[in-house]
Length: 171
Image 1 (cartoon, helix red, strand yellow):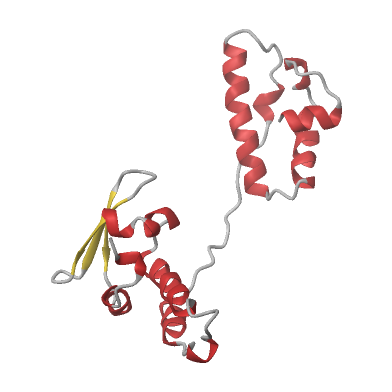
Image 2 (image 1 turned 90 degrees about the horizontal axis):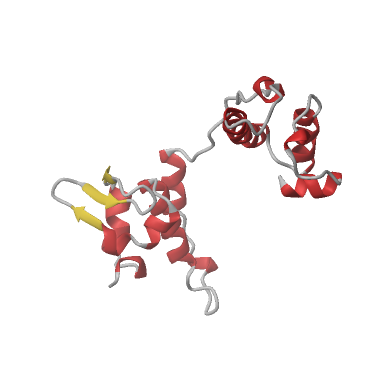
């Protein structure tokens, strides 16, 4: 927001929020290559703050109430189970040289993250915060961001990768 004020040479005050503000601010955000839903999130947060300022008597205009904040449905792009299996089965031995011997590790780590569907930080901390139960074919993870306990079914590929004793699984 401060970037917008500076680039537009506008003094920081509640007077900024007039009838032309929303369109000008949206255009500014779009010029920064932000997507529709991201811009709407900015507007939504701003609208909440302006509503609070209005309740406290800091803002007299009601223009902010007309700010549009509805998002659009987006396509979630993901790999299918078959595509993940193809990546895992890919023979990368011809790509391995003395300087790039980590390619199998990178491939297996990527496939593991796809199989488990966890955040990168949870993948990095997999050894310290995961409990693999091969009799029940599950892994239990306490996620770092939300502190939620998540139970994830283990696929055959995940079990094979786990058995390879990757550096990910060493203490």
